[in-house]
Image 1: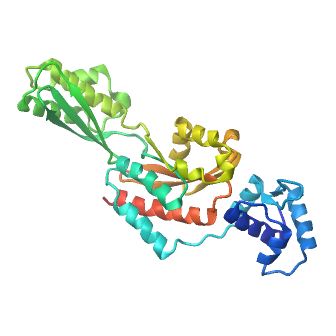
Image 2 (image 1 turned 90 degrees about the horizontal axis):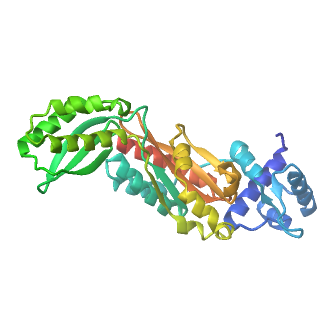
Length: 338
């Protein structure tokens, strides 16, 4: 779509004014803020009418000013937006949030959701990292009481997964060490798809233990950890922040549905790339009052996870996008170089 430089300036200013107030922008208010050009309010109304006819602006009420449409925001994002790096203070706030993160990527993703919601004043959704194929790089067994064994597994992406196995028989320290050695020999860096009954039998055969049923239970627990090691976990925060915006408060069910969604969000946030913006119904027809900005962080082993900020369609993309990009970059540095 080819529009004149004056129309581009008018659209940019209307986006900025509507972002700040949430109100329609009239010609008189617009004239006050257009310090780069001198035109009458009648000329501005004519330009705004043409932008409306082009689908970039809309008029909520007959006597009201104009607000950007989804198409208007998309045109602004693709062609007109100018971002600036976070200020020294903003970057320091991000660094402080990152410094408090755990080096375990799963725990870091959980912390990131709360941090992003706090920093942006909006909603946030994060996912644990995914890679080409999730595998276990190490298993450790820890005895808990007489019959319980904690099975810990470290994935090739650096995440720690755990489960507790309860057996009917007690495994001695020597037997537990033998089971751990057999599990590490047979299931480290093995594809989840290759965990078969034959594989488990071969691991059990390598165990030197009197209590075979207890050893078998621990091995099966380790196998279950391996099979689910690639499952994406989703963390969400900041739902209440969104209700401060009248256009969202009137459509609470959209926030509820989005925050209850898991499969679609996991797919959306697990895509690789830099920064993606989804404006209004681009998220889905049932989410037309919301927008989402998605970024990615990296972890050791070549994996990546997703970080998303949720807000009204009129969120301040000029600040949210560079802020999220900085957050992603610093979080990646922490988790890749840990």
